[in-house]
Amino acid sequence: MTELYVHLPFCRSKCLYCDFASWAGQEERMGEYVDAVLREGKARADALGNPAVDTVFLGGGTPSVLPAALLDQLLEGLLRLFPLKPGAEFTTEANPSTLTRPWLETAAAHGINRLSLGMQALQPSLLRTLGRIHDFDQVQQSVSLARACGLQNISLDLMFGLPGQSRAMWRASLEAALSLEPQHLSCYGLIPEEGTQLSAMLQDGQLTLPDEEEERLMYDDCLTLLQEQGYRQYEISNFAKPGYACRHNLGYWRQVPYLGLGASAASMLLAETADVAYQRQTNPRSIPAYLSMVRDNAWTQRETEPVTRTEARFETMMLGLRTTEGVSESAFLALHGVSLAACYGSRLQALKSRGLLEYADGRWFLTRRGMDIQNSVLVELMDD
Image (tube, rainbow, N blue to C red):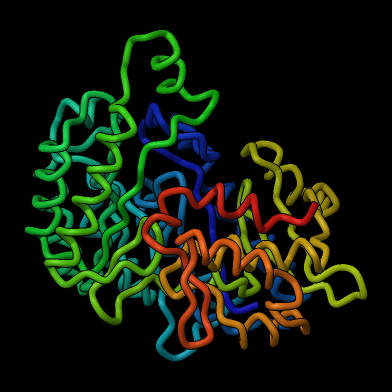
């Protein structure tokens, strides 16, 4: 286990498109929650032998709504349990409307060296549609403040395919983000998740999405503009200046074992048996259920899913083909003890002949056309 994820499920306001485990109006639970995360962390660290970690990621929710004193308590406790390896990447998410100097100074003092800010869009009308509570001025101020506090590695999240968003509006959002000279950009196409307020508004006809062709052109604009500005695409939605790809997320896509702490957090731990490659464990989703699990040491309340070796091989394809580096034949063999050709050879060749996959230097990767219909490609690689 070399990666650590910590989930902080608190928000100032719930975004209309969000289906993550996060809630507004739960500030009175923050102290108890931090205590619970550290108790869970100690139980995990004791079982695993206090492993040093290569990457840490604080996600949510909105980590930046945590008071600086509680952030200090959380980080001090975590780093005692899971020491950072030299050169570790330590990321936190934040909302521009809640970021403060004391919070950033506390983060930097404990080794946080990468900040992921949710910008999403430039236009106030689109931010209102999403239920965001910040504006672009706050994004600018947050970036400047973060750099003044020593956090130089900045990532911005943007969204396209939004209700009411034109191609020109998307390009303006990209250009505004680039003006801040971030090291990394995540550009996501909106997926209206079932059960969210935004999904209900779309179903009721209150909002309308751009058509598929308009959304495809927005993605094309993203690829073109970011490449022109020196960003390298390394995953379907992620772009970085050289040397600034998110190592934590690359670990997920390369199936590096990881540990998750907090409500709804997932872990992937090796389980070397004849039939099972690893176990995926997921904590209870709600804050009360999570606190109850920790209070009672009721670790069996975690949902545990064994992942068979066949399923693990397919996940290698599913995750690896999201990235521009693709799937390495040598890495596949080392991970699974069987060759890529033995598992998928004829199907890979068929997809290559149709212009959906390419092969070079021992790697299989999606073509641009393949990226556009990635789900269809993966269906053809699934075992019957």
